Amino acid sequence: MNNGRDHRIDFFRGLALIFIFWDHIPGNPLANLTVRNFGFSDAAEIFVFLAGYAAVLAYGKIALRDGWLVACVRILRRAWVLYVVHIFLLVLLMGIVFVANNHVQTRDMIQEMGLYYFLSNPQQALVDELLLRFKPNLMDPLPLYILLLLGLPLVLPAMLRKVELVVGLSAALYLLAPMFQWNLAAQEGGVWFFNPLAWQLLFILGGAAAIHSQRPQPVDVRPAWKQPLFIAAASYLLVCAAIALSWRWPAIHDAFMPRQLAEWLYPISKTNLSPARLLHFLALAYCTAKLLPQGAWLQGWLAQQSCRMGRYSLEVFCFGVLLAPLADMGNALADEHWSMQLITALAGVGLMVLLAAWLDLNKRLNKPVQVPTV
Image (tube, rainbow, N blue to C red; front, side, top):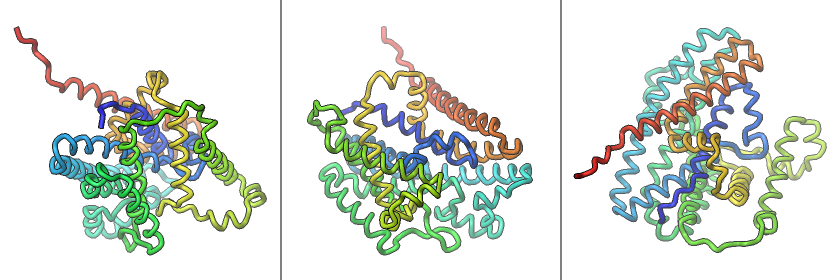
């Protein structure tokens, strides 16, 4: 693996964090601009795919340089940090929601966030929290990432040697999971909203893309719009966009959507990562990679802010989870006025940008100073 860094990964991780934050604020008008409105997939797919890409790229280099055991220890140490962060984040989130609910009279934010389970059975809820089974709204992505990271040491050596075999086995598990209704248990007899046995395929595909990116690639001099695979992917994206946009007008959707296609397509399961969702994301990722190669566009000020957020994705994601109920509270206290909804959405992103900038500055300040020798 070479050491070249693809800054597009940081950029789109940062963009996904913005989309996740906006999507987590009920009634937020800027949520109409996120990727979920124009197809079958959303920012969750971006987040998991790029998490797999970054993890395999980073720990794969460590495994090749220092050995599998060192890489395994580093992975497990990172998973432990994520686990501790998850526990503290859930405690902070519950505190914020309880305080916010005392100020909002028009809605029950505790119920909306799925926190009555904790109030009715705190002892069992604490046990479920430690076992990653208690996941209120906004808290699903982090436990999924923890579990996927814990599984990485088992497949990383095989990925570095025969990535096609690992992808094939991962795809087989993806197909078998919904067929046999395999999933992990959650609180009160439920299951994980993000079925890790299905979503692991996206994580593995991200890792496979990272390995593929480090190999010499044949150069196709043809423009993207003349390449058959790009044409097929772009055509699928256009069809998905037309269907997704038609959901806003049910009468139009019912009039033009073929019944047989609707029976095959719906429901588009997010829990089991429906093939329609998976294919939409892969087509979107492929077309984006073709149309936006690395270049000067990543040097713009806005792109740099997104890249910086992407480099500190864990901290920024957790901060966004805490900001979402605060923004929701502010909107509710302002009677959901559109101006307040815009202010809270933009202010939240501004605070996320400031956090990433502070973390970047703090990292530079903590670097040891090179003292020249005389």
